[in-house]
Amino acid sequence: MNIFVGSLPFSVKETELKEFFEEYGEVTSVKIITDKFSGRSKGFGFIEMSDDESAQKAINELNGAEIGGRKIVVNKAEEKKEGSRPPRGDYRGGNGGGGHRDNGGGGGYNREGGNRRF
Image (cartoon, rainbow, N blue to C red; front, top):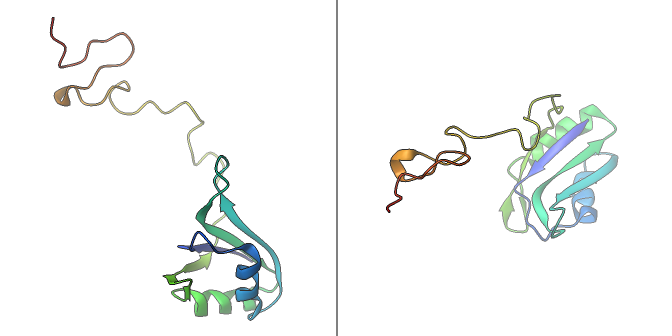
């Protein structure tokens, strides 16, 4: 079973997280998600456990547990749905990319903003 672990301290390492979950059964993989530019932890990760019963016990007992002074969130990971996110660069926002015209935002491409004065 794949388990989501959130609200992790940024300093926690994969080896520490593995040890934490190994108390409940065999851990087959651990992955803390990191920022691709800085390499810094994003504060969440995934644990794969071979036995669903052990994994469920870990979820039940570790959800709300404290690691490094933070209460972690532990639950069954949801499968990533195909097409659930718009393709990169395809989202344009609500008003042609320029914000609300009432707030002085521009329009889209080649449009004048609301607060321009000549």
